[in-house]
Amino acid sequence: MKDVSKILDILEETYPDAKCELNYTTAFELLIATMLSAQCTDVRVNIVTGELFKKYNTAKDFSKLTVEEIEKEIRTCGLYKSKAINIKTTSEMLCELYGGQVPNDLDKLVKLPGVGRKTANVVLSNAFNQAAMAVDTHVFRVANRIGIVHTQRPEKTEFELMKAIPKDRWSHSHHVLIFHGRRMCKARKPECEICPIKNYCSYYIEGNDSIETT
Image (cartoon, one colour):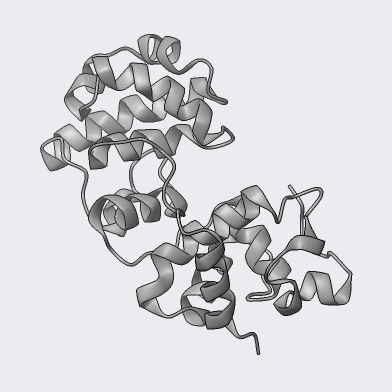
């Protein structure tokens, strides 16, 4: 059994600045930024939203735009065509169902176009301060490499991490696992020799990576 608390303690000490790296001022801005972050770096998203949110930053604003207008604004983000459609329809639904406000409820969030469990959990955790475990590619890779969980799908990873980690640490654990994945436990060339948790890590101890590295 992994000493999960010790692993998290070390990671928190290693990354004291671990937090959401998307720039936002409202739950709606965070929702849009997280939708844009799929297959796109947070750095690129922040560049795009830095200009975008100066012009449009409410569901009502985006609901009035055409898909083509949204496409032009977010073109440098990956998958911009499908994202533009989802942003448009999500904004319309927020206006129709919730008075333009982002609901602080997982079931309601995942019914919005382009909003999966990861995006919903990011919003719940960061905008509404709810305990949530958002699993992106970094969290999936790192948690499985370390051996905290042994899963094949991100959704399964979410539920297994919720079992393995105390609820009051879910949200911050998400951030430190992401930071570790971006800065040290990288997909192709993890920096195992200098890793502060290598003595707790199945990947390092066993010298074997059976986890997808994408």
